[in-house]
Image 1 (cartoon, rainbow, N blue to C red):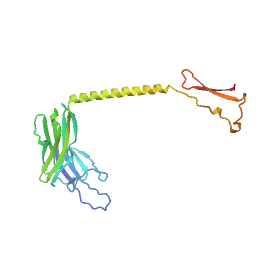
Image 2 (cartoon, rainbow, N blue to C red):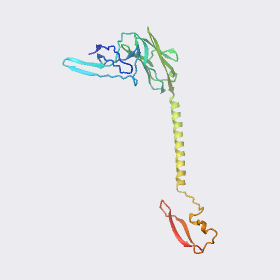
Image 3 (cartoon, rainbow, N blue to C red):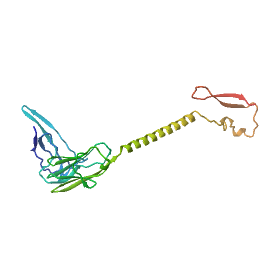
Image 4 (cartoon, rainbow, N blue to C red):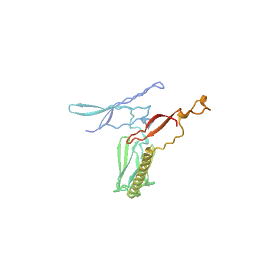
Length: 266
């Protein structure tokens, strides 16, 4: 069973101090669940950090009675005349030749507007490959343009214009169509660049790996050769002790072992 929306409790005016929270409540009954929009001075209200929408749906099932949907939200009557305004505009799209595309937008207006589609500023007429669909519910209007299959000539600018006694509004977006040959060529170029980059990364990694196991050592001096100022100018005794530091490589060992020995200076 389908029933038209009916206000069980309409909204009421309220007065609040500046900076306080204002709340509007209404109860609406309808089947299927009504689609509702908030307005402020005839302009649609969008959710922001200062505007919050609450929707509570309650289903009451009674014997022999169909369910009824109740909604608590802020609403206005759809009997007011409204200038067309887009709640969902056309969006830029990029597709491949041969695929299908859907361009959709939503409009709020009352009385119902005349909706026109344009491609590169030329009116679009219905045909087998291009279909235009309209759907209206009270002040909410949805229009879609389906193109299947898409062709290269379909590239360009698309515009939707809505006109009623209160004014007009329009939305424009571009549709980009790529040839499958171009997509294949782009893919091959991308794959080639990826392979080259991978080979370059492997070469760099191999070079780093080689450098990792190559160690060059140069002995510039030894801290054990230092002598105090008091001993400067004296000749070294043959019996003086000298420390010799040397490295010994051990197979399969991550570190070089250092041994220290004391020998008499020759």
